[in-house]
Length: 545
Image 1: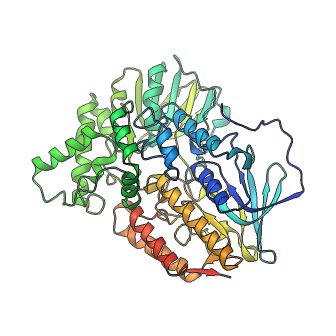
Image 2: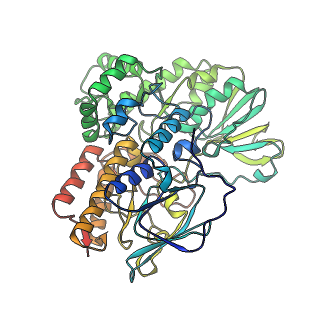
Image 3: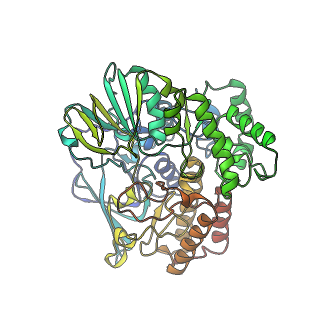
């Protein structure tokens, strides 16, 4: 049974509680942080907005929600016993199974007793005189701590477009990441989905099965690859459990932090058309994101990238029977892989259904939401249910939702007004003893998040243990190290094709957000080596006092 805290419980007392560490968030990052810091002998309090653990896998319970990394790889590696005892039911686990896994971990390691649920952090303020942070919550708590760890997730601040008239809509509307726990009955109803990113691509085929009619409002078509999800193969699971150390070692040094096949170390342009097609066909048959690993220059060479992009376009034309609809679904104005690649189960096939209509809102923009539906510049669509699959204010949004104030009254929002600045994506100058798990400037969303989470949390815990052993009170990056890292992150991104897409990696989905490429594109293995070198040089780039 999932353990929760009742929303009816009284707010916490206003007396000041003190801990060695406060962790914001009880998703996969926050849970491992709690476990690791406990092992280091710290008193820890975790603050979580949801009524249970799981983070993104609690909030994202929309129809079709599932992980886009193989389940066997998208799991904790810190406990050999946990690896052996847990069995995944599907190759790509659905949301409910991931939430069940998170709760199993929390119960197995007795994490619930140090987590305060249904509580949001509203502000955190650093005191130089005390060398402590003060954390305030929406329940009236006031907590002080030496170390503040932000485990808020990269995709947790929802983005709901400010369409005129939304408040007048007589039907029900929902954002995919705030889907009602009891579900939404769309049987026989007229349903509109706004957005065709990864959440839309997962939800649309499932909603289409029950809806009377489904209208998909698409601004930008996305490349999507078949996941080829299936029940877990018992033989594959036995192999993994017998060789988990080998699989984990591979993932930790791989570019993506996962166990997809090695990057084929040849150019897409060095083989014949027939051989290239054969390789892409095999990747398509296997499923997952393997297609992007087919050659070593898809991410950096426009001509090579175009061969992969055109292969997928041809697949869309082959699957979708109506040529006009197929053309609308075909991306043409950005390279494949420069937006987070989507994995689907029957997405393109859905548009062959008689009860599904694709609306191109690039040529026919949405003008307003009416009481009866949605109006574009050309037509009014009657709707009973409206679904926003419009994504997130990624990476910086969850941190900037809080009022975070560092030394000398410096607000994080002001420091990051022109874009996030960090050292290694772990800390930012002016905010002593405040750590970020998978923050901007780290591989984060370009990687298997569990691999990156464990690496980050281990780095943070090791740094705290080093501080305590040496008698130092605080750690923070130097401005020079931070500037150098930001420059390096940009240089690495410039070597790729990522900036050729208006993606949420750049903040392009949020009006007014600075256009900065936020994750580190150098790869998980390379990043790990950088961090290990920093530690070996006595935490080079950090000031310890």
